Length: 617
Image (cartoon, rainbow, N blue to C red; front, side):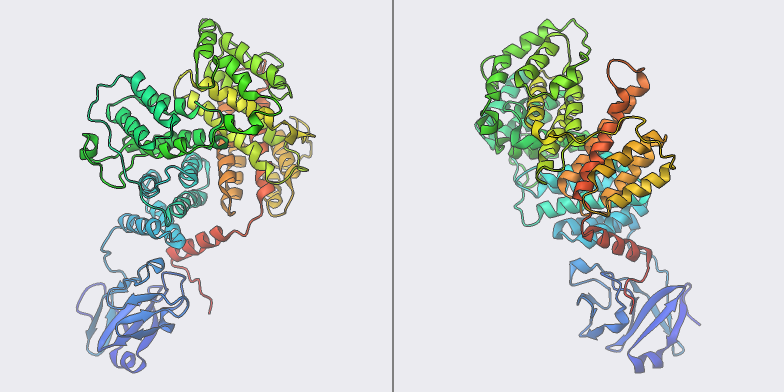
């Protein structure tokens, strides 16, 4: 009998010595036993990389090599030579009376949560998709709140990408925003999607080296804001970073820091096709998930004006590089010819797109008024008359429209552009209407964070971009009107049909029609959002498609909240609930199906974490 508790009989020592290896199952766990260099070693028979039976591998000089992908493991401890493979579990053995005993349930060195957190770090550092998948699944299965790995990934992404905030971190923020509405298994897919995209963005990139804040904390906010904008204007990244870090270190409120950032992000219209302001908005939204303390995690020496530790960039300082390197639409022909749209804006702003005197005067005029959008406001925003659009917006500001109220109207028009995108256009033009939509959404979210008057400029810019997209709705695809479908089908059947449209190319209009039918038959929007989320996350969805769904969900939620507060009035609240989800379903259908390589990796990781066999040989 074994001399220690918990050990189980494995096989006779002499048999193992003669065979040199054996495959044995104990308590349902497949084990590989080896007799090598006069020692008995037992490991999990499943290669941690892809599940190939290690009993079919080879052992030489203390190294176990899997024959499937040639992953190598130190036989005594199970540690891998190849980080992409993960370590293999080893098991304690005892020998008594010529019999080998094994403990199939040894006490682990690390709790599961700590183990997977360490593996997540390795997956990020080495850009290992399978390790990232196993880690994110393992962390959520261990009961870890998604905010913890999100925070770790956020810190990694801002530390190890000198180019600053980019698509990967934006996707991470998008996934954090939608994770709560997804099915449990899709929450793992969402976290995996965000983390792997950050790892990919940082691969082979130089790390960030911080600029510290100023030593003084006595700079007035208006002066600091002016300095920051001036540095961004002349593309001085170092000076801008010091100003921004100083604002955070001085304890300025989130609203004040947001004002600083969004003022600079609107000093020129529609920077980098809207990405700059969208990135900034996502940075603030991601901080809402992980905590404001991550806004600037510079070391104490850096905060006091000394040298900052390399790579300790805070989240918000990662926005500086996109700001100072942005393309400026007022320098592009599409905003100058055949109609000088910038000149139209200058007439409102006061002579230069960076000035505010005209907008400030309009806002003062309307400061005591209460504004309701005219009945034809959406029609004007979607018209082909840029002067009428700018005049309508200026009239709204002088009539008391807040930045938030006006931004909500413009983003609805931008949503309609996506919902009515004509499929006869070039495929790449989907991105054009998408950029306007996500920019307008980001402007609206920014207005809910700060009442900075500069955000009126973001509203005007979004409206002009809606105007520029007008030909992409020629002819406009029809938006299913409420009550247009009377099929009598059950909601679940419609959702299944919707997923099927994503399995075929070109089912754009059918996808939009099915969403309309789902609403008409009284389906629960939460079920629709879950199904759309699943349809998205099983695909190799691109950056824009992931953005599109998250923005559409945000638009629906805000419209749904408003519908719950107000009765039907001068705006069609039901349309505002339906159109975003119709729009994103059409956008998704245009970009699906894909090869689903990421889903294959996720499935393998999930099966490995559950202890299932992958190799069928």
